[in-house]
Image (cartoon, rainbow, N blue to C red; front, top):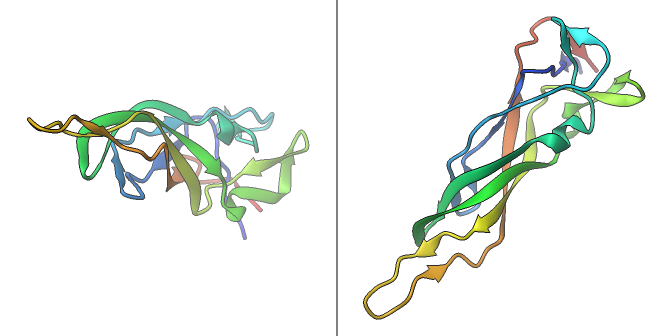
Length: 144
């Protein structure tokens, strides 16, 4: 099925719910490394998604309501986000597709606040799975 080819300047958008964690997400602007261009911008190819890393995102994970921080990244693409036929230097071109699998890696755990009788309790979960999607400014060139 045809879908829009991702290009430099397009965005990876993360959904804020990662399991029981609620993350303050920020978009990531893609930088394509493919040789052909669309609208004078390099196209994105398989491997460019591995550069999607968004550090310093705060989160909570009830009952851990004192915010912690972590890093967002793409764990894997959906099958419809990799072109089967269109390639650039032998790499599949990235397509807008549906949703990718994301991950939130905890760096500083959120905490249950301390009380007069108990210390703060850190979030024991080091990694949360989630999802995200791509947005594109390319409304002319499609691939399959």
